[in-house]
Image (cartoon, rainbow, N blue to C red):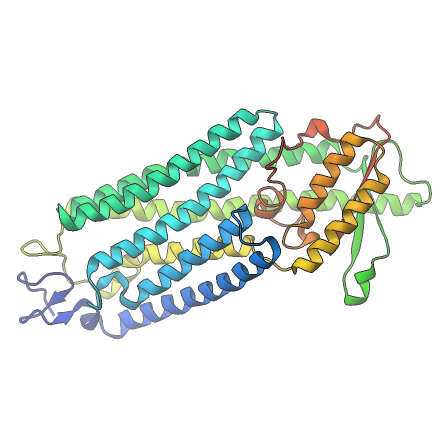
Length: 419
């Protein structure tokens, strides 16, 4: 069916009583049903994770809580949008669809900015430059305000002042700016974090790290415990040389896996950002060249089946981003288990540390590690737990490599990791 130049979007036909969705038929319904199913599933997963993180940390604005809450809201708002995706069914006005897109986009942008802020804070405090942390925090607040303000103002411009296509171009262009800026920042800080871990692996590798099995009361439940001991002078004489070497290899392997995990996490984050940027560039070119409006005479043409993927590309980006953050920040331990593990680790650190400075650092580090979603994954999890969640120091400066025990110091720091 051909479009009628007298009809406003999303209607067509001689009497302007047929919607774009009705004209597309089953193809539109399949795409909408698939997206709705995926987003409802992501929303339910996010609600479960929101409940678990609240039971673990309480209702607060910690990094893990913020990421899970906002990612869940992203999935929920995107799922609600599927009732009338792109406004082609005529269920509610087109401006409602645009506002829902804006809200979902701003939610996920806020999440990503918060994660990048935590990376920047970790890097700046690791090099004893705490003043930079404050600058990064101010930049984060400014970027969040910029994203929300520009997106909502652009939508208001589209439907009040117009023309519609100009508002679209302005919205996408402003969004490209903030995404490109944080894309560069995330790449730089992820690289710096990976470099710091690689330096730690090279400096405190097999020669200074050992681990040994120890009894754990939870072993009857199928759990396994390892104690990783950073020994500045020598390996415990009670352990055999063969066991010590095997344990050193295990500790070194875990550090290498941690670096690989961080690499994978940042790689997938970059992929999602690149997809989003490409979609924005495509839409900027499309709307600036076509200059379509919602009302006659120069109205949007009737979409074809091949246009469905392009029309729903931002729905896919929102889904991928929400699932990405929910997965990397998921919670798999109960609050009671976390408190028990934290208490046990604190006792171990106090009992084995002979240097007060190192003891305080170890206790703080252990507490944050054990508060992460699963202690066994300390070295396997992404920066979401290992660096931004578990190692996000809010009181005082984070320990740099220089604060770790030197080989000349006889200080043992035992870290219990329950698998």
